[in-house]
Length: 92
Image (cartoon, rainbow, N blue to C red; front, top):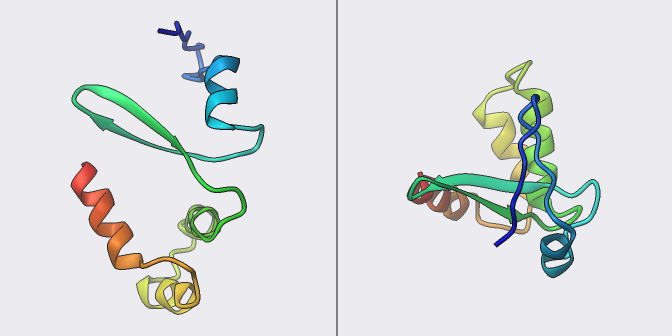
């Protein structure tokens, strides 16, 4: 088991052994959720459609373009949006 320290800003450093095993590199995104009182982090595919959607949602959430615009923009993505939403809801 690895010991991970939390900084005053709430940041953590993932030990190199864990990063190498999961092939996590600088600049990659992780998804995170709480399960059974534990934090679960999973690497997201690099430059994949899911990462692009997360980036878009974060940047545009300030301007709130609306659900219909997001659906229009995501229609050509290579994953099933309904399936992703169901999986996220099941994890919560």
